[in-house]
Image (cartoon, rainbow, N blue to C red; front, side, top):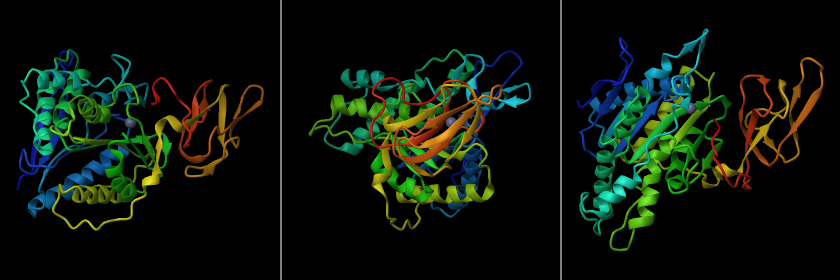
Length: 380
Ligand SMILES: [Zn+2]
């Protein structure tokens, strides 16, 4: 049995308060591949936390059977600060109320200190063995995370999560959208291997960006490798895609259901087996690589006016550019504003709150033609 649980107290809490994060560890420390999984970084997103508790049960049983061959670090509730944010009877878990910052933004980008450590020899020399280079860079990334000096509780949380994840070979950050079909975000370099996970989960869309802006957690784990490869990858010093990281959106906020969670946990266990983290038979599945579309090709259908939002398309519907997809009615005058799709593709997300303000996004469509050429690609 290798299952161990750490309970870490976050520093920098306000006087008289104290918050903790529970971290489950399975497999021998240092065994590879290492997988890191977390849920609830956006503290109001419950489906992932339900899936994570199912994973704890599965992994404890697999551990007892000696089937954990790699190392697995699982944080089933990643954000105790956000869980504690009630305001006037409403839970607000997406933004840190103290600073107004999204909990899944502003993670440290560690490529620079690692590049420095490689240049000045502190990280040891790169050589002809890609796997040895991967281990060396993983250690340098962990050292760089350890050296971060947060001043607030929220930044201490960011450091703690990054410290546990940044030397992983595989990172799954479990989230959900407002109202949505299953989908995931990842980078083009990570995508081909995530086609397996996307297929097992039944994703409607896989949204790819090299960098979506805002420093979300998944990119803090994956994009340092892209930058380091651009600088140091040569035939004599090959550098692999060291960390496959993805943000998985487990449908919508209200899709909190034990049956769905069991299905999703089984899909993740299957993917862990496929990656070689678990010694389980992982029958090859038919994957669909064409599922991936550029995040910059997502059409965000916005309303220019405020009012009551009425949808004319369901999640998963294929729409065509110009199609009337929603109406916003001014509740004072009864005036109706029609909203149209700007591209062809499936509707993967809708705004749950039917009261919309001017400029709000009503729904999102996974197009194939790039629509956004500058600025951040993620919503607030
Ligand atoms: Zn989220």
